[in-house]
Image 1 (cartoon, rainbow, N blue to C red):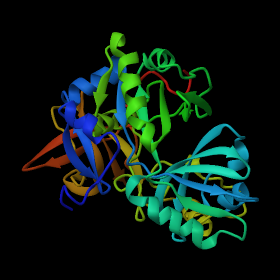
Image 2: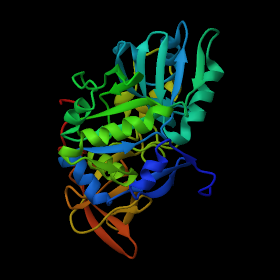
Image 3: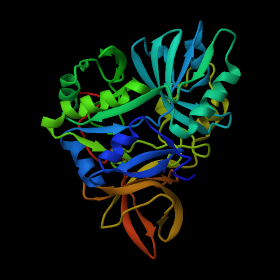
Image 4: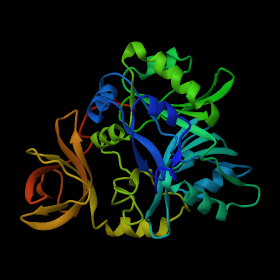
Length: 367
């Protein structure tokens, strides 16, 4: 795709004014960084950062039986949550591969908001619409709403200073008024820090963005790009679809089986996943942490005693730890505490196999 054909969020001009460097992501032109990945990463870990993530998909499923229908398709068990709560879940195909991972916001039994990944929104909508029973409407709302993520230990103060609610529990949301516009304030995020994600009508995005930057100015707020978003999520060992989960990497392999409602009678991919669970997956996603100065990158080969055993799926230099960390698909016998090597260009570097997260961040779940 060329710059002219990439989709743009309603905040694109704001990013240009802030001097952002852009990159293509999921068919969208998105800010990669402003002041620099390390600066932005540090802002989120120590203060507060604001991300435009409007490229994320948005879809509604409404009508009588909407909740039951979605629960029969996607992996997690929607019966575990109630209205006003959110849930991480997976859209799998019949082979057990992951079409996408997404968040569901349960507004009511007949009103659900789905937030898939940018590149997979249309496919998730297509699959749901193809099987929706009479009376259940599946609608693509990708360009109807913007999404902003405000993350970091000072995020609560910033959101409150902007006049929005902050006290609701993790993985819940409330609807709030912002100058006559309805904003969904979600206690969710992808950084490990306390944070919020705001779902905002497309044409109100610039007003909310500006208000958040003003509200967080005294707390050192930083506009953050997708570069820092990637280093922050890798610090936590959070998977990225297309790298750590995919049609070839099942939930069992990708450390996401906790998001499968194993006792449910029906969901896409159930038979294949139950069979894989019974047999045991042939490979598992593990954390790897550098013992030296090596920085792992996706696609690099992992070896044990010079024999290839796996592949790095995500890898980066952690600005928090000041060392290389990553995720790799490894055979079950390569367990935590093992030492492996990663082929980096024409040399090998030693890594320890560890259990993520690599960083003890601000504990989003307990905050």
